[in-house]
Length: 137
Ligand code: HEM
Image 1 (spheres, rainbow, N blue to C red):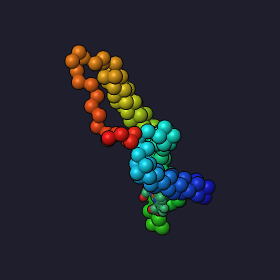
Image 2 (image 1 turned 120 degrees about the vertical axis):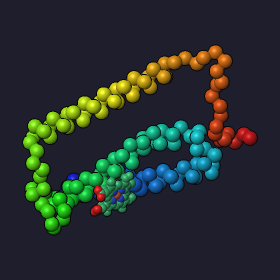
Image 3 (image 1 turned 180 degrees about the horizontal axis):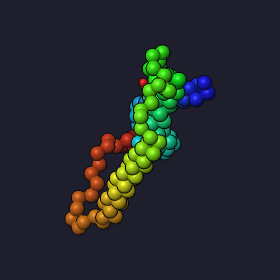
Image 4 (image 1 turned 180 degrees about the vertical axis):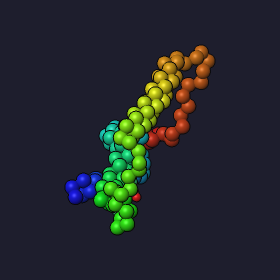
């Protein structure tokens, strides 16, 4: 019971927080403080993993809440096991993990290389794309 109980509340709580974040951002935009309020920008940084955590919580609610069934009332989890050995499950899990870590490492390496690249002579600087939120024109 406990994982389903808490995962559901976490999911709904994060969902409401994200909704609140949207409403607050509209309010701040209206007051022309959306891009300059440091507290707000930090709150947005802290909220970054909220969607991912809510999704994992929702998934926990359904997967744990359904036990001991795979298909509720029709097929029990114990009867729906595939005929693969423990070694095959462990081996393929490590293989996928290793592959993703490799792809992640290569991606990070490419990004860091791009970041290290200095600006070139005559290159155009950053162009303002956002409207001036400081109250000026
Ligand atoms: C804000 C209020 C929310 C309510 C009232 C709510 C309600 C529910 C309910 C009742 C379920 C179980 C459905 C079932 O039994 O099949 C569920 C599942 C789920 N929820 Fe939420 N939810 C909310 C927010 C969110 C948010 C913000 C996310 C993700 C960003 C999310 C992601 C999920 C996922 C991934 C599942 C599992 C779906 C599945 O495996 O079939 N939920 N939610």
